[in-house]
Length: 202
Figure 1 (cartoon, rainbow, N blue to C red):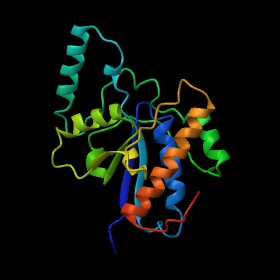
Figure 2: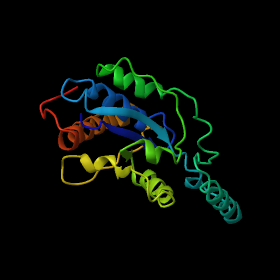
Figure 3: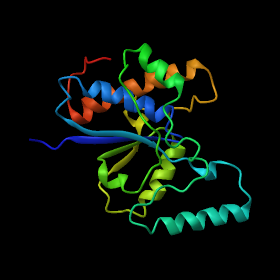
Figure 4: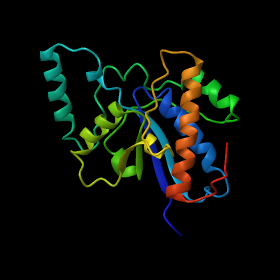
């Protein structure tokens, strides 16, 4: 029997975009054409502290701390920014958008990205280029890891990569847009990489 494909979705705080993508993907993966082909599915956040303004010396201390942590076997991304979401449920607007589209059984507790994820998953999908940059930087310290790190929007189906913008500080329209994108990307990935029925829909 062919080995099942495992996927991880990554954004900043793991309460909006990556959870949206995970909920959609899990829902689609239950369909008969993909049910026996998909393994582990999860999401997490980088919580990149350097995305916030830092004094030069503080930035250096953070970089040094990250480098020291990267020497560990299972490094959890060190970030003051991520801590405020770890253990939290997805944003209410994410859950409402999923439920409006028939996905009512999704549940998740936010967590940080760990370097062991590079060996646990076949594909690690970044929501935007900042997330992708964070992951690629970490992966350079894990050159033998099995995961393929890629922008989720590479599977846009338009011939051009798309980013899923963070809807956290906006209104419902941003969450609806994220849902549309993640649904499209997930179907394209499942059809093109995993193999299935192109007519499948949510």
